[in-house]
Length: 111
Length: 113
Image (cartoon, rainbow over all chains, first blue to last red; front, side, top):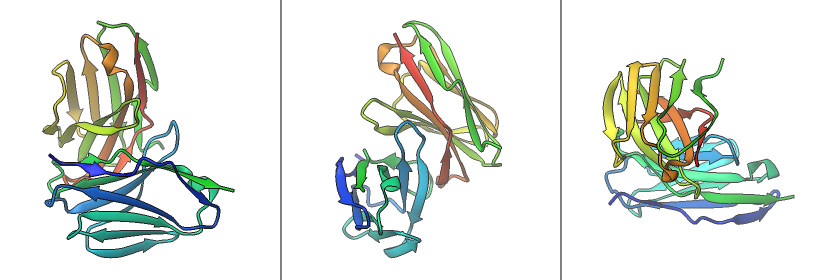
């Protein structure tokens, strides 16, 4: 059974702090990992993707992947109230046939 | 200018009716998807089409029938609508089969009464 798990939250952090969002997955065949952000009433938008173990940075966002532990995380530095949204983790194999989203973590950045 | 568009944005209908949702992408992508997001916000893939060919067909009732007239369009037809079909349906597209960088449409909120 392919599963992607996330803490549903809400995760509350003060403005300017680092928000850490975590995701675990059960399918060891997963090779591509994605983080999407979804504002209330809007569609998901891609923030980052990562394929290799280690860290990948893009502006205030850092994705971290550990395939041995089947764990992927997203760090948001200098969190802003505009970062308040639900963050969805998604994983798939490179054939695109097993594309699974996690339930999402709701992040609230307090001004 | 919209990359992935869906119509209608809202759809309210009665049980037993048949309805369709249309999706179009102007990104030149080869693969298109339909997702269902239920009231608990869980996003689940329903179908995936690559170059008009069905690739993924998750456990979805056969009342749901996708149709892809060309690789820029993927429509979703739903027969005999049920209360449990109420959800937001998202269309998405990506390059190739690997599901890289999926771009989502604005969603269609379906309410079955």
